[in-house]
Each structure stands twice: as C-alpha cells, then as structure tokens.
Length: 131
Image 1 (cartoon, rainbow, N blue to C red):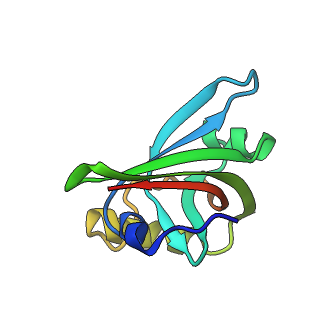
Image 2: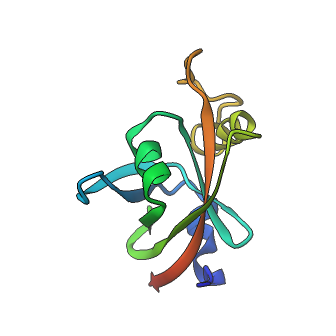
C-alpha cells in the first residue's frame, strides 16, 4: 500500500477539491470534482447512490484522483487505488461534516429526500506528491 506523505495530508484536510476519475462501462474515463477526506490511510469521499461515479465504482473499483493546493496550484498530490469499502452507515453525518468543512454550514444544503448518501474508502496503491 502506498502512503499519503505527511507533507501533503493537509491537501485532504483543507478546503481543496479533488478530481476523481472512474471508468465508464466502455473503459472511457469520467472525471468529477468531489469534496475529499482522509481516514487514517484511506482516502474518503461521499456521493449519492445512483450517480455516475457511484455506478462506475460499483462495477470497477479502480480510481485515480488529484488534489492541488488552492494557495499554490503547483503543489499537488495524485493517488491511484481501489475501492476497499462502500457504506451508507454514517454517510449522512459525513456529508454534513463535509458541508461544515467546505461551506461552513452545519448540514449539507443540497440533499434531496430520495437520495441515499454513500461513503467510499479508497486504498492508495500509487501516490505521487509534488511541491
């Protein structure tokens, strides 16, 4: 397993967006900006079941993502890895925590009654940090 270096953990903990690439059924990449988190050794993000990235990851757990420092875009990290877990448990609380981090709001304002939030944990297999 690759390790997120201490020098770049702040990119996950700050208000920096990640761009996550998943694979469409035909093998083409699909990229989406996401709020990002770090849980020990795992990269974590939250989405709603049924969205394209969720459908892609449920079919093929390979993922690549990059985060650049908003204060210095030449400082970045990229991670390639695989989904090791998917859970709805705690996902509503997690998206609220992400809303607090990114928006300063106590609850996620874009939740809809029909959506089910889900947390994906990514096991880093390759990490490259710059800057």
